[in-house]
Length: 284
Image (cartoon, rainbow, N blue to C red; front, side, top):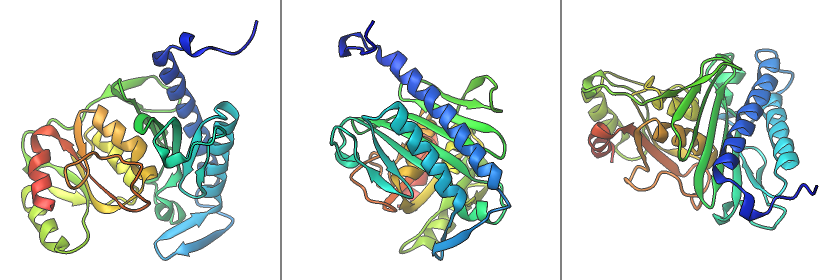
């Protein structure tokens, strides 16, 4: 019997479930690469003062790309380290057409290189320009956050354990909020002060993808980052926060995900619906 499956027989729901399962397994494998070298890195070099690139980073990315190429050779890839990998069919990764995997093999490289256990693997699948699957794996805790565009946000508390649905913060008062916050640009000090006055306390953890995923289950009540984010920071984690029930937008209140934005040019605010508008007004 031929192995080919015609488009008429493809079940989209089953397809997304398969993509999610593939992303979960792949993130776990990449996490093993990171943990094998954690705190005993063989080579570290700097590509800038703010971004440490390690051997583990490159090996994790190679593993992910090789697996996607083997399983989905017709899909495009956008990777944090190696950039764009055009689909075999010829579509550019940023065309907004077809399937695109967006990967960050090690988000939180500075933390990783300094032995701080707050980093993750992020894998997102974009279909026709829209986030469809998101996986954020924390290998130090063995936790994996995940979501699909039409399903709940999920958390598996340990590798191999059943996942359970998670929801964003339901706190009534902003004064109780713990917020992952990084503001920049003109007037940043004043805007940060305005936010601090109405929340409990801000934090900046060094891994945007993991911190944003934390909004999905309320560990962070909100996430605010003025700019400096790239597609690989937000593709998976933004979907997880959104499917957890948070409102996720760009800093101008518009859509949070746009392939047309270049690297390090995105900002995001994710917060419970009841408080999103207030926070957005304070930081704009």
